Image (tube, rainbow, N blue to C red; front, side, top):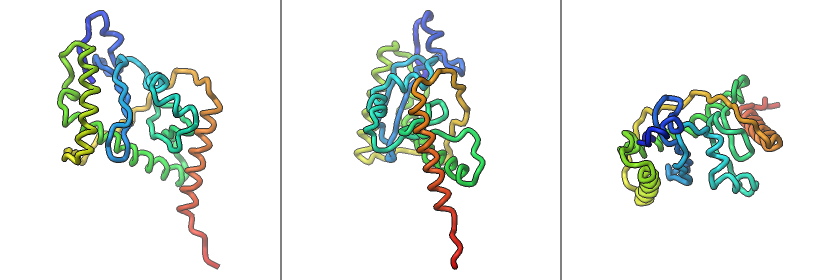
Length: 202
C-alpha cells in the first residue's frame, strides 16, 4: 500500500518497484475473508521476515495447525506452507503446479476486490504513516463485516497473478522443517499421480 512518510524514512519504505509503500501480509480463506492482516512493515522488508514475525508463525511452527497455507515462492516451503515448484517436469508435478496456481489465485482476486471496494488502498494514503496503518486495519475489519453480511463485492474476471520469482537471500536455520515441507509436497504430487493413473482391467 502506498503511503506518505518523512523524507528520512523513504529509503526504508521504498519497495523493489521504487514506490514508497507498506508491505502488507494478508491471508484469506476460501470465502475471501481475511484471516490475517499484518500492516506495519516498511516496503523494503522481505516477505519471509514479515511471516516469521507475524502472530500466525508460532501457531504454525507448533505443528498444531491441521491444514496448510498456500504461498508464493517468497515463502519457505514447510509442512504447513506449500509453495510452487521451481521446475515442474512430470505430469503429476505440472498438475500440482496448476492446482496451486488456480487455488492461490483466490488471494489475488480477494486483494483486487478489497482494493476496489476501498479505493484508498489502491491510490495510496496522504495521511501520516501511523494513521494510515490504522486505516488499513480498519478497512480489513469492514471488509470481513461486508463478507459476513453477504454484501455484493465486485470481482473482475481477469486477475493478475504474481509470477515474479523472489530471490531468496536469507538463511534457513530450520532445515528439518523444510524437509517435512518437501515430503508433504511430494505426498500430494504422488496422490495426484495416483488419481490420474488408470489401472488397466484384466
